[in-house]
Image (cartoon, rainbow, N blue to C red; front, side):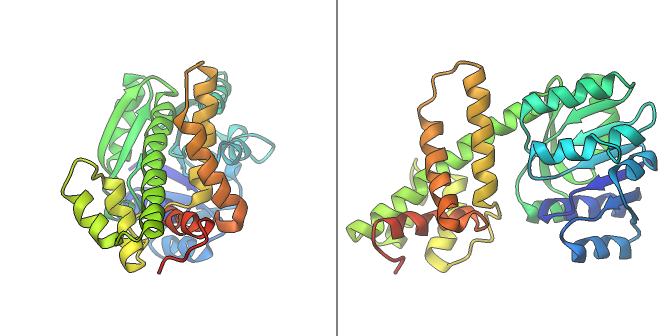
Length: 296
């Protein structure tokens, strides 16, 4: 089987890496802040590298799943970066939600060395990562896509080739803009319901039966009604980062954007109040408290 490296053993990465091991691949991982997840993978048969350079030198394909483009660049460049250790034919698959400008820069630097790069960001949640049921949107030429598809299918239910290099990260930012716009609308609707004396359960029943219903509404309302945020395990800080990347991309394309800045303002407000580490459903409480009320 293909020798694979994995960097970013977080909530999503752990499930992805576990599925790669279970499908029979030799996996080398790089430790991060969650030692517990790393130790679990080592117990399942993974080996551990000390630097990105060492990991790249030991593998044919490396997947990264990290928070920001700055993190990806930190893994690729420098004396201990993957670019310094990778061999000819090496493939880097970045599953992070990243800035397409950075994506294209990294890809050009790889190409100059005879190395390959594909952007393959993810949709769905850590639950589906554990189950091997993620959605993946890939930016790559058809030949590279066909080569990496069996690897991606180890942890994905649906894999979409959405275009050439960079298209995956672009469409993911558009997807996340839509998702976080829905989330912000739901949060404001819940805060307004609380402020006007509307029972959130009555709001849930009505919206669930009509055209205003959405998957995002169904993921947020269990937190509103029961305090259960587990259906949307996505931190406010990450949502804010993704919206900032989306707006930068939209500005570069000279689009007319009115909703994106408003959504970013909502997320930035929550982040500035110290809630960046909390999950997106908590936006309902942030807006409620800014109205001078409690969730009740």
